Image 1 (spheres, rainbow over the protein chains, first blue to last red):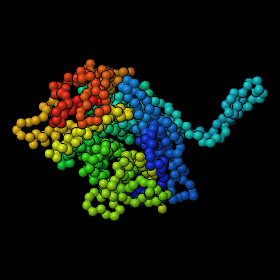
Image 2 (image 1 turned 120 degrees about the vertical axis):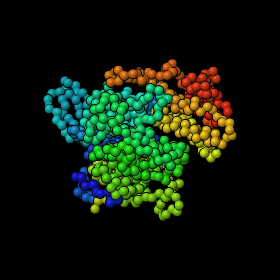
Image 3 (image 1 turned 180 degrees about the horizontal axis):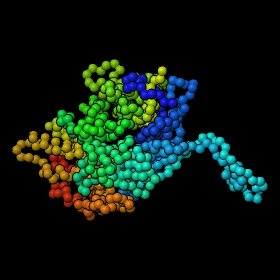
Image 4 (image 1 turned 90 degrees about the vertical axis):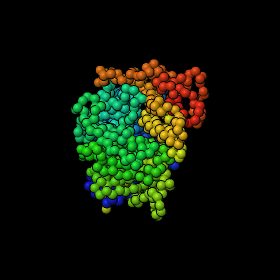
Length: 449
Length: 171
């Protein structure tokens, strides 16, 4: 049963629901969460980590005993998706870190997802087994073969119930198609094809065919000395199967129509906002690089995330975004330090809520931000163990940019830049959000009365 | 002078980051290398123009035109060079792009590209970077000729004559 999405970020009171992962302050690198994704119904929530593992949580059915909260998410399946590999030709190690997970829409009892590391995409089938055959004639129950001479009667094996077992098996491996590091995968609305994008190329795959892919975008210059930009993210349109967008390190977004030509090097639309010359600095190029691009569910808008802001673009207007939200403008004067400690290279993602009225993205100090589009309101919340009591309402946070710090405000200099929220996801229908800190996954939901 | 001091600091850090990214797990990140190269180039330009503005009539520093091409060249070359040899081996048999120009094998210094020797070890270390590798025979320190007359200069002299090309070619 789904509950109607309430209006806006500020009408909603966000409450802590669950936290997953070790409480340890000493974070093992393999446990660092690298991607978070709800499936199409929101019943399943997948995370990928630096160690190449995928953990899937399933929402429990709502119980009559607890009408005031939605079902909890519990571990459903855990499997090792990718292993570290070695490219002998280039003498390079290929990291097992899961860069992206994308769910396929459900067609039958099994669930399917695509997971990718830097070089290889895999299609995983997750299926349930709750019965097993028993009563074989030639085998014992433990699987050992019986001596045929001891078989005196025949019986028909029957299926008997067993404890639920969730199996994950790799059904397809899509390899050897990317020279550079894969940053995005996106399933097409035709549910037959998907794209994978690396720094310089985008390939189109058929889900059933692993030994070939079609290159649809190639921005590699003939001379690498002339390279000025790379592809940073790509996504298919949610309902136009011929349309895709890709963002660049220069802050531009290109919309391509696959009907126009086999190779979509010429864009159909180019979205770019001229830079404000008063903001020019050494680091302008770095902070204008787009780290994520996401279409709205209705397909009319797209959202981009660069280092300091979130921009919403109307697909019909290329010369500037229709909305711009400052995520942490107070960092603009700190860019030099953020460059020194490498934080300026952090790639934040962004996401839409179910009805495209609110957008969300992460920040530092385990803060995450929501922007309510119609009412131009914003909210800052924190994912922390301190505010982790069941159903505790999260208190809005505020950063003091300068001047006198009010009570309950945090000064910019006190922010912990090691605590960053890069990955967030919003349930497709309900006000349930998953927010990943370094190695913990927080689940928050709206307060239900 | 504050501008040039900051520019110098940004440059030094960019070089250091580019250098240390060689040992990063997962290989060279093209996006990060590109951004660092762009920062390095604009910081260097600002540094030179700040220095030139402060100097007397006689302009100091290396010829601007030449090293301007170098950072992106060298960085992209080293990041792309190895990739190109790999891709020609890994190319999909039924790729749609077979009939097009083979971008993979097009290279200005073909022989250099096909070489699998690591150029990095041959570059002498700039004195402001921590020494991480043993120095090789000086006769192996030649860089590709494309970098022009300024590129193969030794690392003596002030930061004003910073041979960016050599430092980046370290990876």
